[in-house]
Amino acid sequence: MVISIPFLKKTPTVAVLRLTGTIAAGGRGQLNDQTLAPYIEKAFTKGKPAAVALVINSPGGSPVQSSLIAARIRRLADDKKLPVFAFVEDVAASGGYWLAVSADEIWVDPGSIIGSIGVISAGFGASTFLERQGLERRVYTAGKSKSTLDPFRPENPEDVTRLKTILNQLHDVFISHVRTRRGSKLTDAQDLFSGEFLTGQHSAELGLVDGIGHLVPLMKERFGDKVKFRNYDVKRNFLQRFGTSIVHDAFSSIEERAQFARFGL
Image 1 (spheres, one colour):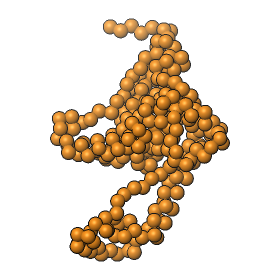
Image 2 (cartoon, helix red, strand yellow):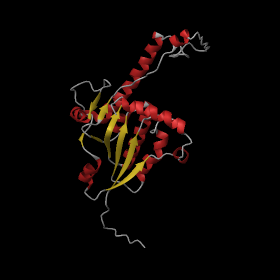
Image 3 (cartoon, helix red, strand yellow):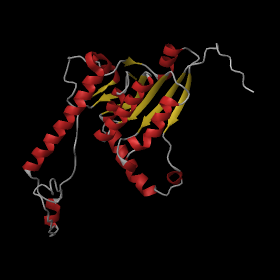
Image 4 (cartoon, helix red, strand yellow):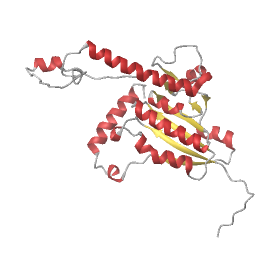
């Protein structure tokens, strides 16, 4: 039988949610709103935590999934009135930084890679290859823009102009999100929204993050030496663990590895 002592002070607990990998819908990325939803919900609701800590190691990915995940974190933080701290390990760039900005405070290692506040679209053109092989590709559409950016056709300047318009619109949304969340903490020392990525030390000087700090010592400083940690890590499902999606996982791993490699990781 457990005897409850009503006036005994409860040891504070910090829920730790680890966000590692690329951000993409479906099975293309480790991080997406559908996969993370139950973990985020538990982090904020199970056991009445004193705070939620996000441990982030992500080079980014889908802007929509980044926005959905960050919005879910903010909704629960506001609803439960809980402080949210982000701790960056190797990298929080692009969509990874979008997630970090959902926290009330962002703490990094001096060598962490931060920023890359921009939007990118990349692909290949194979029209010359087809021509050299003597192949003719036939495409029929209804709607003059239906085959926009077809990689098997010569690049159309009008297509590029339309794409750049969309990229600029997405960039504006990203900038607005950062300005709203970071506010007066940001400095005017340099263009923070050029897409450049920076070290954790430099990011702290520019106000992109709050300072240099690691999870355990900083949480002990805030909540006492006896603070407890409850970890929530995204787990792969039963079938994935036993290799039924080996080919898909291999391609996803290559794609993710390429994303991290952009930042020297």
